[in-house]
View 1 (cartoon, rainbow, N blue to C red):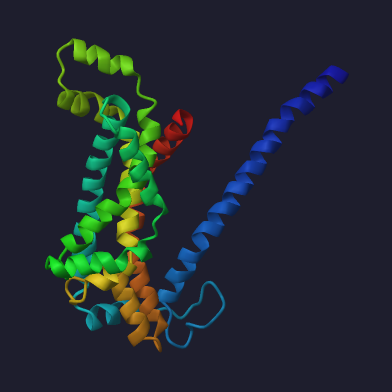
View 2: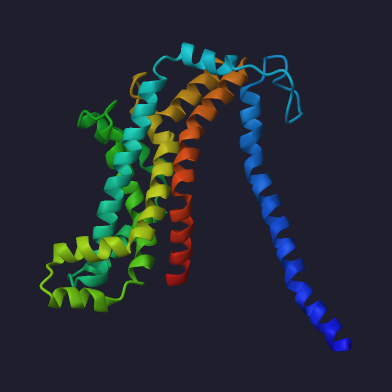
Length: 285
């Protein structure tokens, strides 16, 4: 009887622990989604109910979205600018960072430790300290109001982070695979394309998501580079509405939702690969 009770108690403990973790995850999920839900609620409220502290109200309207689109007909161009800049910057960052990690990890190049340390030192430089020099360079080379005026700095600023992340994944790739490929006659470019890149897939997904969201949300450098209405990125449109339509906050919240929806869709599509990549990186690191 005592043994049965002991087994029963021992078997019930994992159930209680599992329930506790489920409750904790539910609480964390609610707290994470609450700001987004509240912003979504505010974007559908009328001017009279915008300051109502309740999370949900009965008086709703889509007028804020209609007014935002009518007052700013360049939003499709702004969306295109954000998408092109973020996509190209992400693709180039992944390419250059993966090549750099491959070289640092496998190639015996003289001075590679110095180059790696220089890249790591770039992590300590805040973007606010680089805005003025980058803006002056863009002005000198005619890159103001040009996509490449943001793409090139974004690539340079994100490569150190990408190298740091991919280095952990690269260290988990067995050198024996590469040695076997070399014995079979695989060249260095072929080794990079056929062996390294497929095995770095999880890390590339993590870097891609991080870089894309960083470029999509970046504001300070874009503010100094893009001045034309058709070349501005979406965060600049939100700032513009905040200043001009400060008496109509519902329009501002509608713009914020418009900016956020593409990121939510993007992350929803790749969330499985992102979680797998983060878990794999943690194990390999």
